Amino acid sequence: MRLKRTHTCGELCKTQVGREVILNGWVDNWRNLGGLLFIGLRDRYGITQVVFSPETSPELYESAKKLRSEYVVGVKGIVQLRPPAAVNPELRTGEIEILAQDLEIQNPAKTLPFELKDYAEKSEELRLKYRYLDLRRPVLQKNLMIRHQLAQLTRQFFTERQFVEIETPFLTKSTPEGARDFVVPSRIYPGKIYALPQSPQTYKQILMISGFDRYFQIVRCFRDEDLRKDRQLEFTQLDIEMSFIDESDIMQLMEEYLQSVFDQLLGIKLERPFPRIPYQQAMEDYGSDKPDLRYDLKIQNLTSVFTHSEFQIFRKISQEAGFIGALVLPQAVSYGRKQIDLLNEYIKSVGGAGVAHVKKVKSTLEGGISKYLSAAEVQTLLNLFPEVEDALILIIADSDREKSQTLLGFLRQKLADDLGLIDPAKFVLSWTVDFPLLEMDPVENRYVARHHPFTSPKDEDLGLLDDAAEKAKAKAYDLILNGFEIAGGSIRIYQREIQEKMFAVLKIDPQEAREKFGFLLEALEYGAPPHGGIAFGFDRLAMILTSSSSIRDVIAFPKTTGALALMENAPTPIGEHQLRELGLALIKNK
Image (cartoon, rainbow, N blue to C red):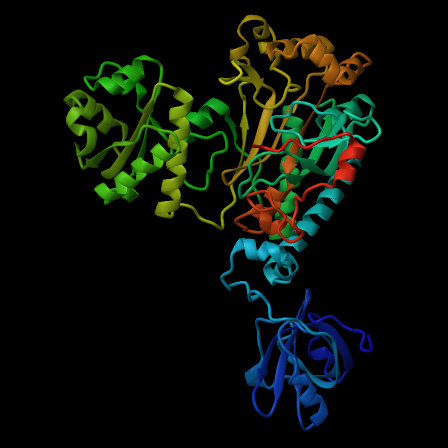
C-alpha cells in the first residue's frame, strides 16, 4: 500500500483547508461532469468528496475515470473549500472537498449484487448471503456502533457498582431450560455429550454461593428453537445476579441502569419508578403479560354482564368461569363488513373462534350481535362506556379465561397497528410482577415452571406446594418495553429442602434431580445466601434502541428464519472420519 491514510473520511473540515492529506476508503459514488470528476470516498466514519481535475493532472484524471462503486482506493490531495452552492449540510465534511494529486487503486470490485444505499429494496436472503457487503451500509454500521456503546456503558455502569464480570463455561451439561439444547459430542468420552448453555443460570447461583455477591456477564447463549424477528439460535444476554437482596432492590437498580442507557445513548430522560403491574391485571387489561403501554386501549371485562343472558353462547362461557372481553374503538366506528370479516379471520388464524361485534351509536347498539341482547343487557353495556358516543365494540369470548384474554391482546395489538395508535418515538417501560409459579403442560400432563425450576415461591405461598401448587405465585418479574419483554428474573430458591420440594411438584424425581442438579443441591447445603437476579435480552434491547424491526439488524452475522448461515453456508455435512472419532453414526430419514 503506497498511500496510507492520515485522516478518516469523516473528520476533515474547513479548519484543515490547505493541508495535504491522504484518505483510504471505498468509492461510494462517482460523477463525471465533463470537465471534472467527483467521487464520494467512504469509510465507517463518513464520506468525503474528492475532485479530479484534468487541469491539475490529465494522467490522474484519466486514471480516475476507471473508478467504479466499491473500488478500494487511496487518494492524496489538498483540502479546499467547496463553492457555496455545493456545500452539503447533511455531511460532516460537507463544507470541504479534496483536490486530488495522487491516486492508488488498492483493489477493484466486481459489479455488486445489490445497491448499498439504505433505501434500496433488497431481499434479506440476498443481504445475508453477501453480509460483508450489507455491513458496509451506514445504517447497519450505526446499529453495531450503538450496540458497542451499549456494551461499554453496561460494563462501566455495573463495574462502578461493585459488580464483577465473570465468564462461565460454554461446554456444560444438559439441563431443562424450556428449549432444546445444542449438544457437542465428546471425543475423549465416547457416548457422552456436552450441552451449550441456554443461560448461565446454575453457574451464577454457584457464584453467589461462592461469595461473589454481585456478578454480571455479557454472555452468548444457545437455544434450539424456531426463529422469528426477535429470536436467534445463538443470542446475547446481559446476565446479572446479586446476594442479600429482594425483588425491589433488583428492580430499582435495573431502572437506574436503563435510565443511564437511554440518557447516554438517546438523550431521553426516563421517569422512575416504572409502573408495576400484577400478572393477572396485565392479562385482564391488556391480554398480555408484556403489554405495550404506548397507547391507551384497555380490555373491558363483560363476563358478568352475560351471566343470565338469553344469548346462550355467552351465558355458558360466563357461567363456566370463562372470560368475555371487549375493545371499544371510536377510531374504528366506520369499519364495514369487509374490515370486520378480516379481523374475524385474523382471530381464527391465531386459534380463536372469531370476533363478535356491535356498534354504539349515541344511546343505542346496532348491528352484529345486538339482536341477541335483551334491553337490560343493552343498557348495561351502554352504561359501561358513557363517555363514548360512537364506537365499534369488538368482543371475544372463550371458556378458557387466559386464552380469551390472550386473543384480545392479539386483537388489541393488531388494531393499534392498523389504526395508527402507536407513537413510534415513544418509549414506555413497566414491570410485570406476581406471576403464577407454575403452568400446566397439556402434552406432558404435569406442571412446569413458568420461569425456571429455581424460581422461589412467595413466602406466604410456600405451604401451597403441598396440595394447591397451582395457586402459588412466584418471586418473579419481567421488564417490558413497548410490548417486548427485554428482561426477566426472579429471587432464587436457596434452601435445599425447598428446591427438592419444587422438583417434586415438577415431577423431577430424586434420581433425575441428582443427575442434573446434584452439584447445585449439594452447594445449597454449604451456606447459600439469599440471592436473585435478572437477564436482559441484549440483542432485543439493542434492536429497540436502534429502532430496528429485527434483531438480525443488530447482529453482525445472524441466521435466517430457517436457521441457515447463508454467507458461510452452514450447517454443512460432517465427514466420516470426524463421525468415527466421535463414535457417531448418522441416521438418515427415510
